[in-house]
Amino acid sequence: VNAIDAAGNQTTSSVTYQVVTAATPSNLALLKLAPPTVKHNETFRYEIGAANLGGGTATAVTITDPLPAGVTFVSATAQVLSCTWKGCSVTPGAHCAYASNIVTCTANALPPLSWSSFTQLGIQITVRATAAKGVTLTNTATITSANPDSHPGNNHSTATTRVR
Image 1 (tube, rainbow, N blue to C red):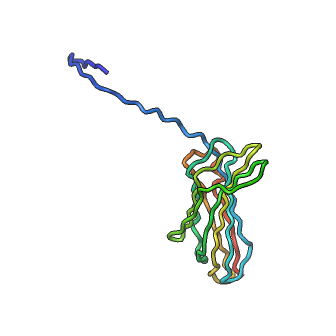
Image 2: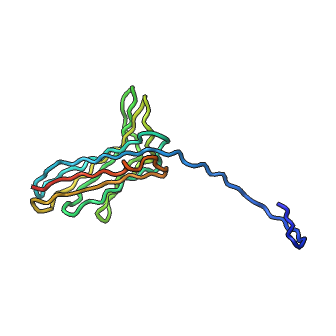
Image 3: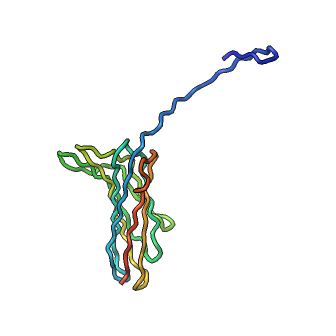
């Protein structure tokens, strides 16, 4: 670019542009389930299901689950299940990690639902109920992705379990 300022000084400069396209919004939804009651010191599982209800493919999907006081972490697994009219298969690229009483599970991508296919991220978190009898354990998980979400109201789910 050639430029001349008000005093008549001439200068040359270059400009570089980078075109960035906006990610297509997804519509992630999360459902968390747990048994209504467990015995003190019994192991039980939190079951989490996540899907993309529409829009674009959600990438870098992360589910974060801070475990409540009164449980001890045992294990966590994640898998992406993809189904079509021909059948279902497990897709690689999902895993869970545990640190500082938080379970974090990730998946590379969740494509949107269509009339011919369905993909779900399934997570199982096994814990031991260490809370005293009569305590209600409340546990909330949250899902995010690298894409904007068109309906963020369904990005978290809570399950409660009473220790008996």
